[in-house]
Image 1 (cartoon, rainbow, N blue to C red):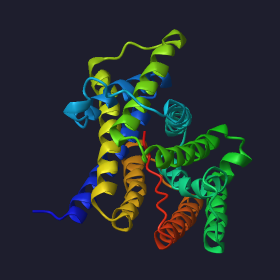
Image 2 (image 1 turned 45 degrees about the vertical axis):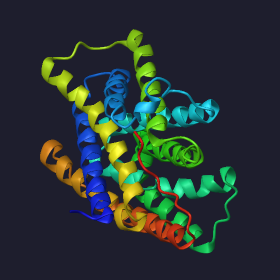
Image 3 (image 1 turned 60 degrees about the vertical axis):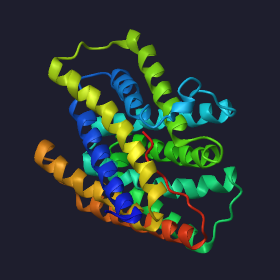
Length: 293
């Protein structure tokens, strides 16, 4: 029988695997419009959520007293999701993954304005190193005017705001309801994109598109359950396995070899996010940026 910490560790590992395979499929299905892919992410991402809705809430599960905050969370999440999908299709997998690790840096800054938190010297140093790492990674893109390097940065900013709104929402709202509204919003945005050109998928591609939603929805729930069961300090460092998976998948599928600059920049970003994470644990403030896609 596994302990709560061991179960949390397992759930976090499975969540990371699910997110990595979702990223892989998003990159693989780049011949389909992003709006169409978002529809499949939202519609099929709702399915795992219904397994968590209590029987007593089945008739009114959608009711909430905080619609405005849900709207802000969904808006930021939609921008982040569209940005990461765009980045995955146009940049090496390891590069995108490396930059997304910078999300805690932006969360630290945004928490000053939205949560009125005071940031100490340790976290400011971590923010500096993190931004320096991002600049090292994106420098080739900036010099060559490659606009696609901006998308994973937009993702980080969007997910940082999402992390803050989820902290506020989770005080009164269950995780499954927060996830449901987001998946529903993705579905609606996807449907609205039909006039911009959807492509009739082959059966094999249809299965892959469905998997994007199932993997994304399941990954979010596994992530939430991991944080619920185990110590955050135990499971959060596991997320950096995503970079290993990204390097392996990128090399064997798309012949992508990370540059020295990407590896150095990624190391600085990871180092800075670990400092921020350790300081949050020390200060008993959990600012964990889960992907929530």
